[in-house]
Length: 207
Length: 218
Image (cartoon, rainbow over all chains, first blue to last red; front, side, top):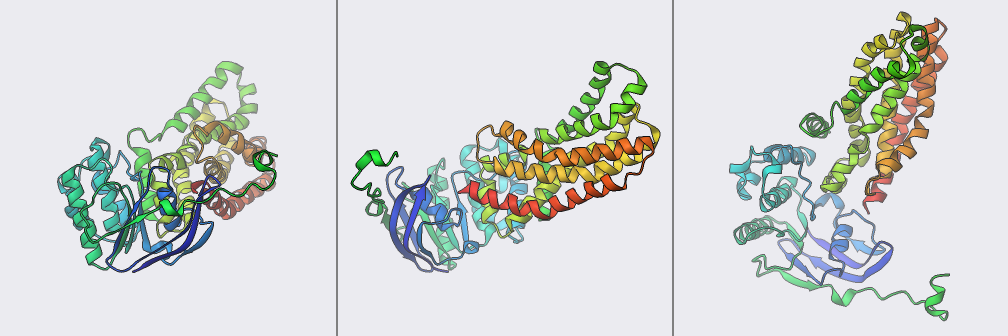
């Protein structure tokens, strides 16, 4: 599965923030998005995942090939780790959550209620959902928040395995995932220019 | 689909899920009315159909904001919107789960509360029938209201204001079925209108709810 984004423009709250974004991801490739806070990483990822329409441009991968992981993990506190994961596996029409539990090192926690997990453990459960989704294109927004060094390495390994199986990954992250082959894509050159306000200048914008 | 239904039912039944909240409210309301109005059976029998229907409606309203708000907060709604299930189906299943945890228990307990309010014996059948036919509309319309206000912080009050006017036809015809039944009059017309509102709401509103959800998730 490949992901090709060409000439994409996105807006947040009606204000254009990125324009002319183009990149391509081939099978087995990972792309790391970089940019300061507020540079539009999350908005770009939400557009790629199909959660919000782009102002312009095309995204080659259909939304049903994309697994999206955001800041919120979609975990229900009163359900156990196993129940949470089984639910998402059923939604994606996949059977068997054991490999995902194993890979994200959650087996020992499987029967614990998710509300009793630590932040990092919850994050691991949220990321395990990617594995049960069975989707080839991973779109990840700060996947390593609240993970310790060991878990980051574990997750880096999971991403590498996914790439090895013909997937690809688009990751917004500030820390090194341990993917030396991943390209870095800086969003700074694609910052949208403010619309020209015309001869009337600033005042006219409020009329 | 089944997985979503069982998850929602399980969440409702576990601690903090809010199951029984509407039921308890309904019960308390029916107990309070005789204390306020006075214990005369004749008076209570006249107002019982209206009280029971208004009570059912308010009890339904209590748990509406949980339908989407919790899933929105923890990110599940974003993930469900990108999952391989149509959002229209997600909305319908959520409305069904709401009805099973709120509407159905209200239907089942209503005869007991009818007894408290001296509802005439011939009205019980119509009370149950009208609630069975009418409460699904309350859940479906309520799901639409919840979808409209999903991104708003503390949107519960706004949702009540949006939803209550939409409940009026169901309330009018539902209560009319019961009061006509109590007087031994023909109930066909209000019953048919009640069923019509419910089928119309069930058929059309999931599409509207899914549409506003997509817009609210942007």
